Image (cartoon, rainbow, N blue to C red):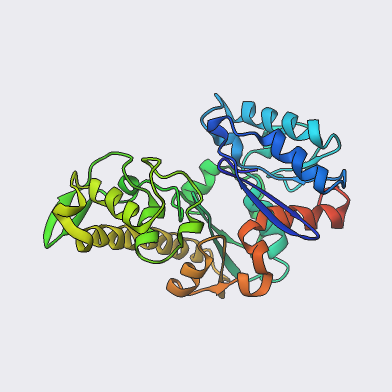
Length: 310
């Protein structure tokens, strides 16, 4: 259960719902529909949605998610950053999604750095020493370079980039929520309109033309002022800044030593595989690569029966 998406994995496949918690998302309704079609009463859960700013504290978010899930799955078990399953709301449940995936991936890739690019963030995790990952909060991961707050869809352009070179001239960007990563990647052909699954900043069309208009607004212009070429320059420089931040994070993590390969997952895996370069886990895992924490927590829960999977 993330802040923006609900991802469910069972033996039949992967289901992903847009579920932005800050917009009163119908989490319970979605889960009830899912359980109606998938009546298995067992559920292993991992979350990161407690950070959504509709909650005053992370603990408030944890309690809300746990209570909501347990109204549908009374016996649900929740995976924590201590590497254990819990049956109630405890602080260790905050942002444990990455750890569940790391714990499962380390078996097949013990000497890798795992890079997972989602809609909002990019996790950069060394898999060689699982015990050293236990207990890490998002704050600690930010400080260590294990969490880079940039993603394929939702990142505001102005957060990643302060200025661009536009038609040869340095140009500051408006510090406004006019355009997001999805606009840049749609214009560059890195995603399709169907993959633009979050809201557009102006709630407008999720088309190349709509994305170009939003990118032009980042320099306080209409599209007929900077033309398509100018908007594409903004998109390209945004992606270069994103990629630089991710590469810098990977380089920092690789200093821990013992890393011999890079593996990529998430909705940005194809881009990462091409640009880092890295092995794209979609080739080995298929669609579950886009919902790896959900897949991993299911695998660990099935294997351990909900006990501590150390």
